[in-house]
Length: 293
Ligand SMILES: Nc1ncnc2c1ncn2[C@@H]1O[C@H](COP(=O)(O)OP(=O)(O)OP(=O)(O)O)[C@@H](O)[C@H]1O
View 1 (tube, protein in one colour):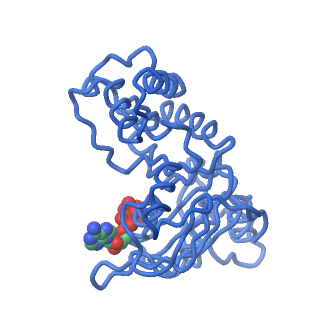
View 2 (cartoon, protein in one colour; view 1 turned 30 degrees about the vertical axis):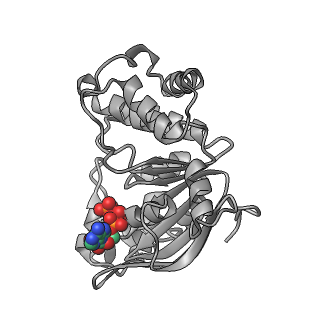
C-alpha cells in the first residue's frame, strides 16, 4: 500500500487473541505512523480488542508489537509503552462526584506526574486543549455527554503521549459536538500517532490520512481513505427502481435509488464515497454484520 510510514510509531506482526472459540484477533499485522488512522469494522470485528492489546491492557496469545521501539512483552518495555500512551477507552469509568479537574488530576497521578505544581499545570493545559477550562470545577455527573467525552480525551492527552488510542470517542454525540470533537482529534494528530476506532465513515473521510478495515479479527483493507473510496469506482449507480442486481440499494431523499454492487450495462454511474468502498469491502459478510457496521 502507498503512504506507509517509513519510521512507524507502532509496528505489529501476527497479533492473535482468542476468546474460547472466537478469534477476536487473527494474525493482525500493521504499521502506524504520525497522523490519524481510522479503524473501521462491523460489531465484533475485533477493533476494541486490538486497541486493548496495543494499549497493553491485555497481552496477545501470539504475535508481537512495538510502540516507539519499545517491546511491551518485557516489563521495562511495557512501562515505556504505557508512558508513551494516551488511551480513551470505549466506556471511560468516571467517578460521578469527581470534578473534571479531579478526574484528570487522578489520571495524571497514575501517569506518575508526582510534582504537584507541575501536575496541576499539566491538568490545566489539557483541560484548556479540549476547551473545558470554564467547567473544570464542575462535577462530572453535571456535565453533558459531549463534555464528558472531552474530559476523557483530556485525560488521554496528559503527558503529551506520542501514541493516542481512541475507542469510538464520538459515539452518542450530536452533530455539532461530533464536529467539535473532530477538530480536537485532528489537532491531536498533529505531531503524534492517533488510532481512532469508529463506526462513523464520515469521521474517517474527514479526519484520517489512513484507514484500516477489520472483519472477523482480520485486516481486510489498509490504505488511504481515497483508496478505500476507489474500491467502489464504477460500482455505484443511480436508478429509478431498486436494482435487483445490487448488493445494497436504497431510496435517497431525491426519490432515486443509490445502488452499490455490479452495475448493469449503461448504468448511470455515481461518484463513490468512502462509505461505498467500505460497504463493498464487507461484501460477502452476512447482512446482519453489514447492517451493524
Ligand atoms: N472479554 C471477552 N470475553 C469473551 N469474548 C470477547 C471478549 N471481548 C471481546 N470478545 C469477543 O471478541 C470479538 C471481538 O470483539 P471486539 O469488542 O473487539 O469487537 P469490536 O469490533 O470492538 O466490536 P464493536 O464495534 O461492537 O465495539 C467478538 O466476537 C466479541 O464477542
